[in-house]
Amino acid sequence: MTTGTEIQATEARYVLQTYKRQPVVFVRGAGARIQDIEGRSYLDFISGIGVSVLGHGHAALATAIAEQSAALLHTSNLYYHPLQGQVAARLSSLSGLQRAFFCNSGTEAMEACLKFARRFWYTQGVRGRTQYVAFDHGFSGRSMGSLSVTANPHYREPFEPLIPGVTFIAPEDTAALDAAVTSSTAAIVLEPIQGEGGVRPISPAFAAAIEAACARTGALLIADEIQCGLGRTGAPFYFQTLGLTPDLVTVGKALGGGVPVGAALVAEHVAAQVLPGDHGTTYGGNLLATRAALVVLEELMDRGLLQHVVTVGDYFGSQLQGLADRYPTLVREVRGAGVMRGLELTVDAAPVVEGALQRGLLVNRTAERVVRLLPPYVVTSAEIDEAVATLGAVLAGLPVKENA
Image (cartoon, rainbow, N blue to C red):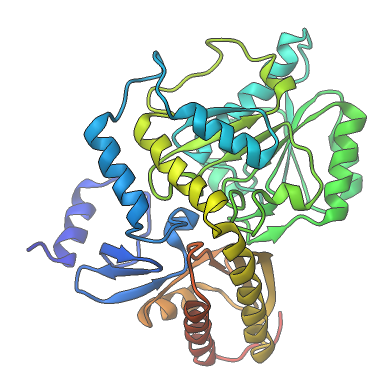
């Protein structure tokens, strides 16, 4: 049998080294738990960076994938198949946007939305409306288009020049927003809760300012719900809790429960300006991906999973706040909603992630000082208690620092 050390050595020799992986090899899972090659069990509170929302080894998802792989996997978008329309109808019902373009990831969905926003103006004969407004701490992907509306210089600088005409402003800075959004702005790109940037929710007041800026100038709004969407916060989409009315919405991560699939959701007035041939994909919306998406959406909409996220999410938030109250010199703030939470620390989060891994809990670090927690939607209160207790044990072992 191949060992974990041998697997890591093979990757080190043959796989492009774009990831700094944790030294653990996972081979199977069930629910919120995942097992490594040596048989050790871990509580998974990152769920593949927000992907495995039904947990690991979900019976209905596994059955659907097996059945579909035996019947028909892929035909391309040259032809119809029975599933794309069903998934699109469900997404329309959840989001209020009328149409969907299927792709393979959230990043691809952002690429599509950036193109559709420009196409919207071009079709109407408006040639100079090509600029975008995005936000500090925002992250929309690493392809050239999505990277252009991603703020972090660490990601951007090695690949510049990127798409020109992108202005970054600080979230919650209404004056900067009003100055940046003009008659040259094609679209505003917004994560209603910034994920990679440190689990930072946008306030209702700033959301209202964004709505006002769009109304004043006609700029479109792209809501990036790749991480905070599809039920993770306890709402179908977080933009709905803020009173936003986006023209385009990006979906990814949760949609396939682990099978790669993304979607750009498009309001009818934008869709009317998009023409055949404007965008395309070979794999997007194939039978395997859309069959998996149907299972996730059925669990979310028909089998009580969304309400479970509301209930367990409230409990999660209260338990994390209790943890913060016990360690006020180490935990600066608890942020997020539902089962999307971040602990901002007064120290680097790396030792906490490492200590949690050693104790059998998977979390990750983002924005240097934030411990990001994205458990599967099926997580239980008992598992939350276990995770919070583990984090408490890790924090207890850190040197006490005064709030920075």
